[in-house]
Amino acid sequence: MSEHTTDMSGHTTGMSEHTDTGERAGFDLGQGPGRLLVWLYGVFTVAAASRSIVQMIMDFGRAPLAYVLSAAAAVVYAFITYSLVRGGGRARRAALVCCAAELVGVVTVGTWTLLEPSAFPDATVWSDYGMGYLFIPVVLPLTAMVWLRRAPR
Amino acid sequence: MLDALTLAAGLAALALAAWCGFAFARDEPTKDWHFIGMAVVAVLALVQLVVGVVRLSGGEKPAQGTAIFVAYLLGAAAAVPAAGFMSLAERTRWGSATVAAGAVILAVLEVRLYDIWGG
Image (cartoon, rainbow over the protein chains, first blue to last red):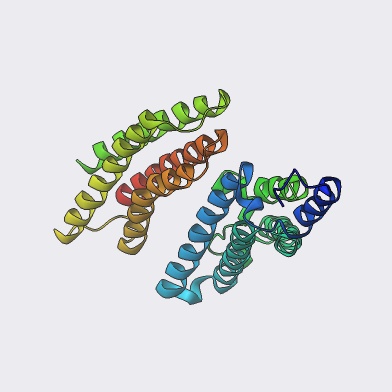
């Protein structure tokens, strides 16, 4: 596609533009600002996963709901991290859906912990809208959704 | 010894965060000097991991549990090197932002470590 000297140059340019939008899957979601998101999502995957694993091993009976929710959060974070690294149209859509789910999860669990603290003898990653984690759990899905819509296609 | 290390690592992490945040604001990628800074902070966290494990093997118990303490020690030792590797592959201002974020995370981990060890 790099032969600019051919008499079909106009045609080839059109072709290359087409393939650019069509199959530029690569790592486009994980570059630039996306790199920061990959890092933060990676950290939160590890944080949520290790938190739920340690707590489940130590004393699952103390707050089963909180620990299961932390594990669910870890799965969502892991999937978004993977989608950002993988890149491409399908990963973008999947990540958008997961970010929306994450946001719904944070708001739901956050409200739930405020309304009915007795259901949560121990905290989750999403308790009080992620206050124990500097509110990053609320900010992260919003930022990620903006980035996923804007990232170069 | 451990508390002093926690304080030193936390302050060094904050300084690294400010430095890389400055590079981000000036639209610069991480440079050699930044990586030397990262190495210093990473060594502090690594020494902390070793000292922490030695103290544990000496029979001392962290106030909030050994498993959580070790998990945080490992996380603290891994945070800055991981961010550094990601910034190696991202030669833009966003690589600097990644390291700055990693350093802030380390500072938060140090605060938690202090609580976990001392209660």
